[in-house]
Image (tube, rainbow, N blue to C red; front, side):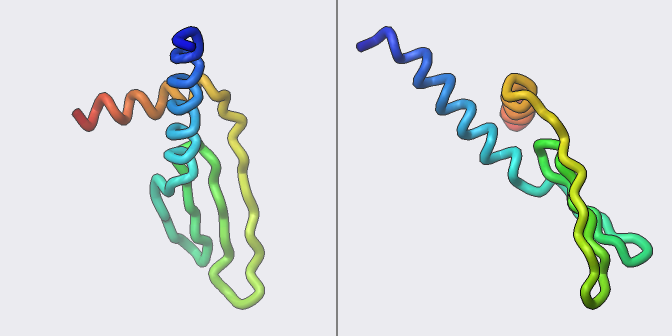
Length: 78
């Protein structure tokens, strides 16, 4: 059963990186628009008014790139 240890480790690392990617990196408001950027590169724009619309800019981040960014953050924290 030890032949699957590496696969399990990589899958755990991917799940942690995906969870980290959903967290907010920063929030910025200007001229009635609230910009929320997430760790995975996605950006949400919201109009700060009644019935304001919300638009998304989705970043096409690969799994390897997301894991690499996550590991760099972990290395900086140590």
